[in-house]
Image (cartoon, rainbow, N blue to C red; front, side, top):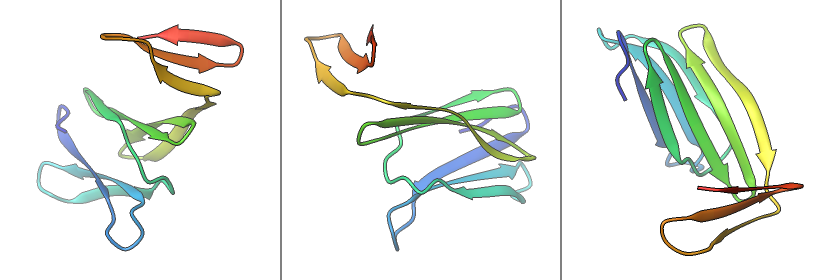
Length: 101
C-alpha cells in the first residue's frame, strides 16, 4: 500500500501466523515494524503519510494508526456476533448497537 512518500507492507509471519505491519520509505528503508499479535487482517487505508490497518480476529476489531513514529492501536471493539443478512449487507452487532454495511 503506497502513501505520499512511504509504503506499507502487511503480512502473516510464517512461524506463528501473526500479522506484521512494516512501514518503509521509498528508498526501502524500514521505518517501523510491529507485531499485532493477531492472525487475521481485513483492510488497509493510505492517507497521505499515514495508514490505517484494520484487524478482524474472531470477535475483535482493532484499527492501528501507522506513522513513521510507530504503530498505535486507535480503537478496539468486541462484537457479540457478525452475521450476513443478504447481499450486499453485513450485519454487525456491537452491544448495544447494530451496524449494517
